[in-house]
Length: 273
Image (tube, rainbow, N blue to C red; front, side):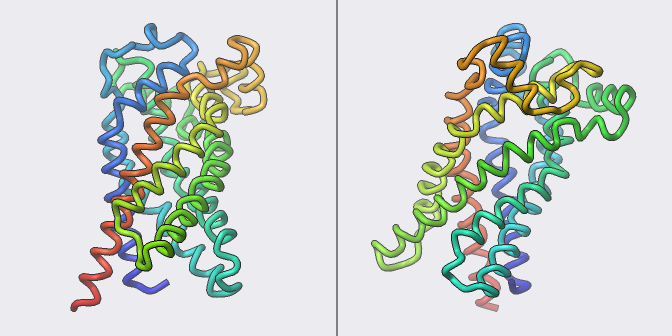
């Protein structure tokens, strides 16, 4: 991976993260409130739809930049070492390692953001102070493993499909895909990944919203899934399915489309110098 490609991945990833998180934040809030234990209306309904935006503004750029730098680096190393026949495996491994590293930044943001979304009368700052006071620094990482367990299968599905669709489209038209075509491929791959992994997303949300000291707060994702199923049945495991699929389908288009557009633009500018 060249220095130019690394810089391009860094800046393009940051741009993509900010673009999707800010533009689709209201959908994310609706999804979180549908998944919360008190239910949609008691969690705030459509009031304070931008509650929890501040930590997202701060964290989205570095989180997405870290993900894409790890993804591109891993993909390049594997394909250079093992050849193009390992392309699909390199996409899966790159996306998985990208998520593991990005979650170190994403999870504290998610903890504060989701609690603010589910309690619109509280500010992000007051939630952060409360978490640090009651649970210490590690309280910001409650749900880390459940987030990784959600993100890894999602990435296993989304990124190989995204790369495959781009490759097929490129082969069909005889030239590399344009950013808008990459965005369409991102929407399809995101839709599929979002639908399949919704139960893991519901479990992650319930763990992050659980009161300190309760069994759910331990972060056991199997226990969380069993609890949700016992409370609400199969429908509970797919709470927030529609806004999640909509959010990630549109988000996949914005996220991956912006990423490819900015990446290509930066590489072209560097080559012209």
